[in-house]
Image (cartoon, rainbow, N blue to C red; front, side):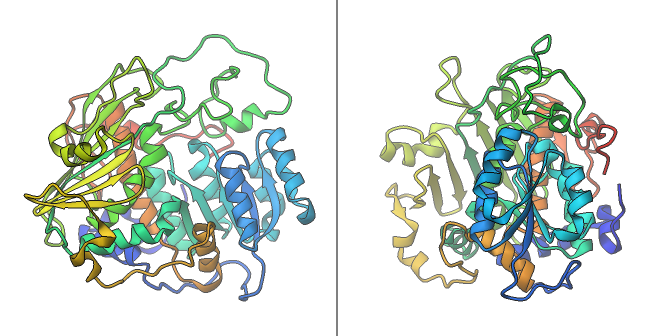
Amino acid sequence: MHAPSHESAVPNQLSRRKFLTRTTLAAGAATLAFPYVGRVLGANDRINIACIGVSGKGDSDSSEAAACGANIVAICDVDKNFLNAKAKQFESMHPKQFQDYRKMLDQMGKDIDAVTVSTPDHHHATASIMAMRMGKHCFCQKPLTQTVSEARAVRALAREKKLATQMGNQGSALSSLRRSIELIQAGILGKPLELHVWTNRPIWPQGLDRPEGSDPIPENLDWDCWIGPASMRPFKRDIYHTFKWRGWFDFGTGALGDIACHSVNMPFRALKLGYPNVIELELASRTYKETYPKTSRIRFEFPEREGLPPLKFWWYDGNPADAALKPLRPDTETAHELIAVREKMPENGTIIVFEKGKIFYPDDGVPVLCRKGDEKLIPLDQDDQCKAVPQSIERLPGGPQDHMWEWQRMIKESKPSFSNFEIAGYLTEVVLLGCVALRVGEGKRMEWDGPNMKSPNLPEADQYLKRTNRAGWEV
């Protein structure tokens, strides 16, 4: 892999102090000027964007990029049906069409300022690295990468090339998320002690074995390009494409990769989590050779940091709509105030336990707090102590494309987007360590040396930190 220059060339030397400094800066979206690699854009110039993946999130990402004023010069998708539909939408811009982003970047490089990457997870790093090495600004869907080593490489490359970047966890643009960070860091309930996050994922097929045999490849699908950097396997109808890939080790990152970059985003920043020093899969349903389990509980332990005490974070997943499953969730003591009001556990949510109370983020999006000794739930925006906390993080205009708009502003004005790869890379690393724990196995306490990217006590974890790309897809 290409070696970045300066400090990024030796990521193992990144100290915890430097890590915390960077995450704090990123959380506050501090101004960070940089020279442009590509053409210099004026305030009124249109950004020339190539969209890699135009179905699913790629459909909305490409549409939002255009809605924010970009010129869509090229579109790429392995499925001609999706490609043709998007070409019709962008007919007035006459984008060139490709099924292979390698060919697109090779042929269109001089005409492209930036790319959006909205593919299955296993393509995220490969496509982003290829584009960024050419000096192209990059918007990449979550999770930023499929492996821990890719997250570090992508972050380092973006820094080396001084590129405008944004990971697609759209909640980063919301005023409510930014306000929560301000309130928690102001200490409204004292110091944080525990974090609990749960989800109704998977909502796709997961917990299964690979089917035998093969089916004819549809004429509209380039199966070789769909497989991309992963190991080749036979095409099977209705097993991987379209959106049934996320639960497979080779292509996705399971429930963690799908939702944790959203749901853990705010507490990761607000609690200044940094790298964990222990990760353990405490419990899971039946495990499978090639897919993630249907439900799991994972514990992350974080050491003292910036005057904050050690903290334990529990992740829970599992779909309550699965009749054959009882999904793992926080215990009733942890969640009892919320359950008392809602009468049942929400399908998704977050609980942060502090010295002086708790904050709940249920799936209706209205955060509430309760102070210790008082089970009354108060919306954060109605609490007198919260009202007194001043604003310290920039708010965006409040439009539906804020997240995309902020990235395009970074391209033109050098002002960092809130989920640029410097912060998104760290968040992705932490999330993907949960995936590593799932692969290592239940009950194995994995100590973690973040700066050196290794487990001192479980060397078998190394095999899950990186992937050897298939020939022709190396980066």
